[in-house]
Amino acid sequence: MGGKNFKEIYFFLSRRNIDNKRRIDMIDIKQFSDEDGKHFVKEHKARNIPLTFEEASSLGKYAVYACRNLDDRQATAKSIALLVGLHDQAIYAWQRNGGITQHNLPRNSAEQIAGICAAIFQEDIAQSDFGFLHPNVPFAMDNCGMGGDLTVTANISTIAAFVASAAGIPMCKHGSPANADKGECGSSDFIRLCGINSFTKKKEVEKCVELLSFGYTEALDTRYKLIHMQTHIIANIPHMNDVIGPITNPLSQKLMTRRVMGVNHLIPPKILAEAYCILNEKGFTNLQHGLFVRGFTNNSTESGIDEVSICELGTQVAELKDGEIKEYWLMPEDFGISSMPVELVSPPPTMSKYDFSMAILKREAPTPCLQMAIANAAILFWLAEKSSCLKECYLMAKDVLMSGRAYDRMVEIKKMLTKKEVLC
Image 1 (cartoon, rainbow, N blue to C red):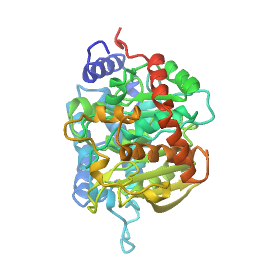
Image 2: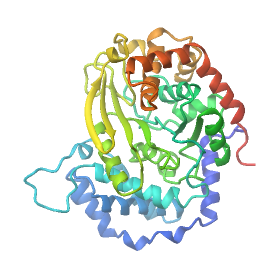
Image 3: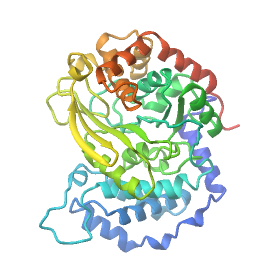
Image 4: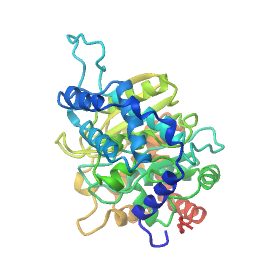
């Protein structure tokens, strides 16, 4: 990118959008008062009770207003503080007790997540320079995860997306640079190091999806949305963007009918499936079949990774299909393979996450690392209905990776979306 880092590019794009006064008046700031902020802190954060859909939506709109009006320091500080405070494991785990009679309490944190994301869809992406992507494909999938893994693995979701793409499955992946990730190499970092321009123009992304079954949208590209300014530029700390980001992929939600979403240790996968149910019902999304996965790498409940695990404890899954949610576990044996210790699926201490990921893509990594990537690609094949048998999907994904077609597809994408100066 002409030697410029993500922050420089992002700051330039965000200032350009703000200087253009991008429909700033669309949001009535009077709808969010000082009393709202105090109520959220005292009655929600302090008591570990999530916001209702309506409350969360108002906060989301306020956060977008703050991103468009950086000179309003109070709005910036207040919205960031609230989104940090509400991004809490206890809040995500809260369930309304049957004995509680207040009718205005949410059932669980799915309302909070859905309300914030609805505001980003409506007031951020829909009002942006680029808006939503509309590639000419019957559907396209994403497998973006929350990040923040407590165990370092490869850039599994991106590798799996390359594998699926090489098999003709339309992927429109979303992602960002590392923020909460221990490996310090998020999907955008990996994409950039592969030589692919993550800040390419909208029409080029759409064309790449149509011709090569792969597109990538950068969460920090303010021509799509501004909300990630708060975590990656202004505050440099995680907040609800960890969950907002994967859900608010700027692909047309009419096309996002199937997806995988990786979940970290903060949120039960079922909560995210329920959040999508709310968004579907209110017309913001159109997810017909989704897998929400949280993998485990050892016997600790704090060992979560935001992808399918082939370690002994397997993967917790919430599957949303046609409005119904069911929960189950996926074990390595479901893919036709044996479980592996975590040491065999993590990069060696002397190897960077990027080098480790590239070794997998080049088929130069040890077998367990390859199996981890193949298993995560297999669930994309399954969602795309390549086969109703997960073991067959695993074998299909294995053939694509081990034949070199996934690496070759990455090279084709690189040629089409060549990394170049984005600011000229």
